[in-house]
Amino acid sequence: MECANSSSFKAFILMDISDHPQLEMIFFVALLISYLLTLLGNSTIILLSHLDARLHTTMYFFLSNLSSVDLAVTTSCIPQMLINLWGPDKTISYGGCVTQLYVFLWLGATEGILLVVMAFDRYVAVCRPLHYTIIMNPRLCWLLAAIAWLCGLCNSVIQSTFTVQLPLCGHRNVDNFLCEVPAMIKMACGDTSLNEAVLNGVCTFFTVVPLSIILISYCNIAQAVLKIRSAEGQRKAFNTCVSHLIVVFLFYGSAMYAYLLPPKTSNQDQGKFISLFYTVVTPMVNPLIYTLRNKEVKGALRRLLRKGREVG
Image 1 (cartoon, rainbow, N blue to C red):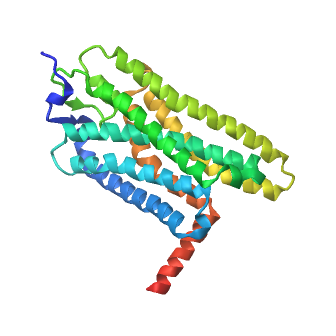
Image 2 (cartoon, rainbow, N blue to C red):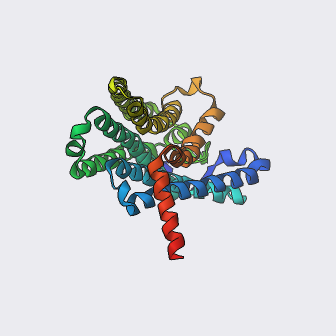
């Protein structure tokens, strides 16, 4: 069969959604509920961070950026999944697939770097508390956030551009819930060694390097916390970090499994589950992780609800 560039196709078929037709309505309901919870949780954090003066701090500035990324990640893929689950049509347009590919990679890398920035913020707060306001000034915070978004964009441009140039030789079936690099590479009929090398290199940089920085930061934080004499001080320092650590392991654990493990060592269905995990589950539980353990956020939410009742 004669090879053709991916741009010659008008649409792709998302195959994995049609593998279990008897479960499609269950998947639709579960996905819709997860999406609504994600919208509610992350929008609440963004709203509280902007409306409540007590949350106008560096920590909540970065947390609202993280929530913005989670909102955008889910919106880039879940509505298309819901459309395909609702009816017999399982296709996604070429433009929609490419857009999803670029946006998903951009936001995924941005989230990884934001988690590094948040670890640095926690390091300064615990290890350099007297210099915290000087070091984490508004200018530096905006700069760090901009770097995270720009680095994520660079990652997307590199990987996605290499991927969309692959010859597909008539293949239109994407064996996944969404258009992402590993699934697109599997569709190619030519030599994909360069694409796989780029994928491994970029993913290693955006996972192993940031995760190493985060772990080093928390080793220093742990040493500083152990030096605090009061149990109350240790507990407070621990609570400011544990939520972030949980989110870090959820994000990087799933990302490393999906992108860095060799295909032969990972089960195909498990890989699809991991893709679903970091596109649906992680953005949904992130707000819960930060709010359930955070008295400041819960207090801000109570104040906002109280104002709403007074106005009503």
